Length: 292
Image 1: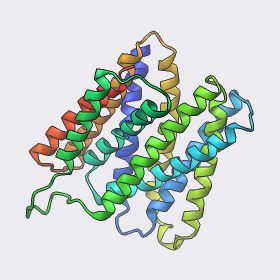
Image 2: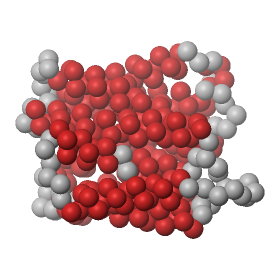
Image 3: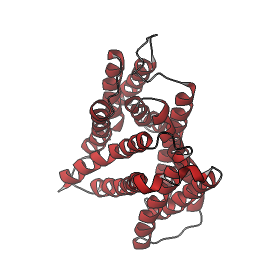
Image 4: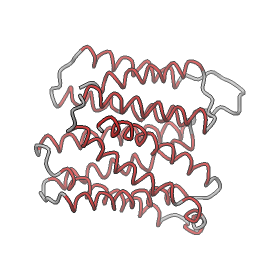
């Protein structure tokens, strides 16, 4: 049964990115549709975490500070990632988002006194090589290839920082409170993120967004639910008989691999040969950094 949960978790890891891109493609021409997506996605996430919190109720005032930090980072990654997919490649954006683990690793080395192992050093070096290969771009006239833009770089960097920050704050909270109050932190954090996205949505011209829910509301709802359930699968796997050295590398690399398949066959993205090499190197680096 544990392997079944692992397979579902791997698929879930990639579906959030995939549904974002499907939504982007189906709402081309709808101004401010992205704000609507983020608000609806976080509303569905909040509902799921509300149910989880009701079944695992606890309260500690000090946890609210972690909720605030996580909520701000979570809002940042949710707002930025869908724009990053609009302005750049799904494959490359997903890889860079996964490599945000490098931020957590460096933070751990500095502040958590994590050991500097050979795997960590090799993993960090491979991440840098991977990013260099993926970002390097020759001049070309192939209009079918998405070119990098300043907007893509800004939004991808925002998603990178938000994802790394969320992971750091979540781990910090779990260490300080000995694994307790995790559900409390998440439900208040998601509430904060939802309010931020509601504010952004209310500031936009909502008349342009009115046709969107009738055809595509399922995408943000499904994305929110899947992201929430993924956390549950990870918790279940963490208490299973499977080794963490198997679980986390498989989740990271497997999710990236599934996203790559959608990128090639569903979205018809074209990358240069050195970028594919960079993705492979990045997958190896992610696996090494995830080995516990």
